[in-house]
Image 1 (cartoon, rainbow, N blue to C red):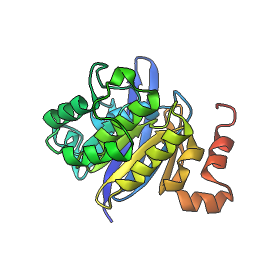
Image 2 (image 1 turned 45 degrees about the vertical axis):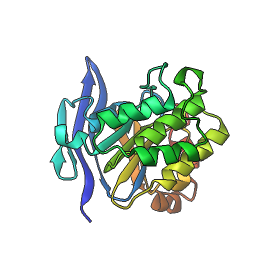
Image 3 (image 1 turned 90 degrees about the vertical axis):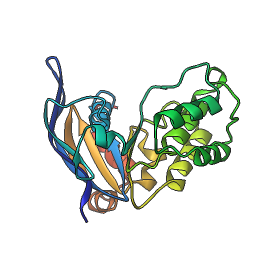
Image 4 (image 1 turned 180 degrees about the vertical axis):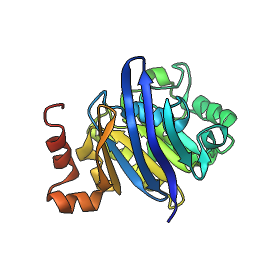
Length: 234
């Protein structure tokens, strides 16, 4: 199989701080990758580089055979770690906003996801709980016909019921033609859906491989392995 995503020797600096240091890995299509590491490890920076929001100091990122740029932005659907929606928006306003902004946005699918998430399309963002906002943003992100979905801490700060609904949505929208990268440090809640794992610390990959192989090799769950690798950092 040819890789949907190829990252080679990507380095990103913020002044004197190195956020990413020679990061290299690939991701096949139809796979879900768990990108794990403590806060400040470089997860968000890496997703921003893949989405084209930020540019690396050096290295190469290729998505579906194309270098990151205008063309790849149309292939990537990015859920950032901060809510991008205006507080005055109703859910249906957010849907219209995405429809105007993204040519590949499927409005019908989004309304179906809203129903699945049990969200009211006329409720305003300002009156939603954090979990509801997460579910709305996830519905919007997964309503695009993208090749690569990037989710930055989609489970952060939401209650267990919301987490279960979010994980169910990820599974529901899974496609063999696209791939998903989920950045998280809440590994226990989501590790069962990971095909691949990439652990990052201080901008460097310290462990990567298929989830099944890592479980077998280390005789422990991915959550237990994560705790072992980052015991002094989490």
